[in-house]
Length: 111
Image 1 (cartoon, rainbow, N blue to C red):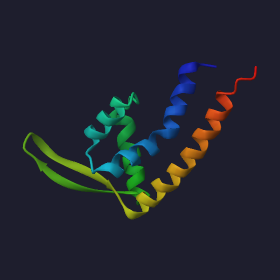
Image 2 (image 1 turned 90 degrees about the vertical axis):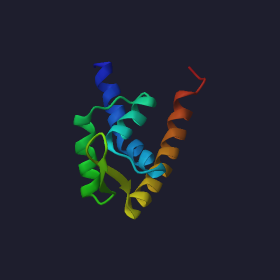
Image 3 (image 1 turned 180 degrees about the horizontal axis):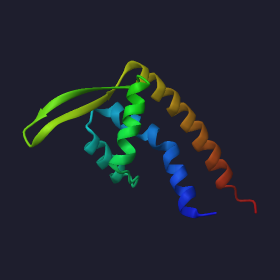
Image 4 (image 1 turned 135 degrees about the vertical axis):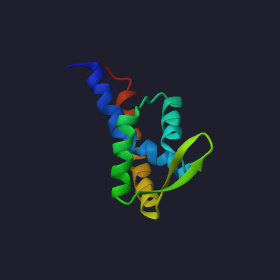
């Protein structure tokens, strides 16, 4: 089994949660989202992010607005909808339970 493939699958599993968490703090355009993920050591390219943002928008978890930019084309700013906030709340609870369970299993001192 390839380690890189396993690591990529683990990252993909939490990417949606991380994006929703970023947008819960403030609305953002895709470059800001990529930068926040990069700062957290989750490297994501536009080709991965844009389809995910579209899927989240189509699921009515995100909405967006256009804003003119003085340094180029208009920017699409994404934010959470009420349904997105409720979904994030559920994911946060699930993440807490999962994190606690994995920590308990992986930090066991018995060998």
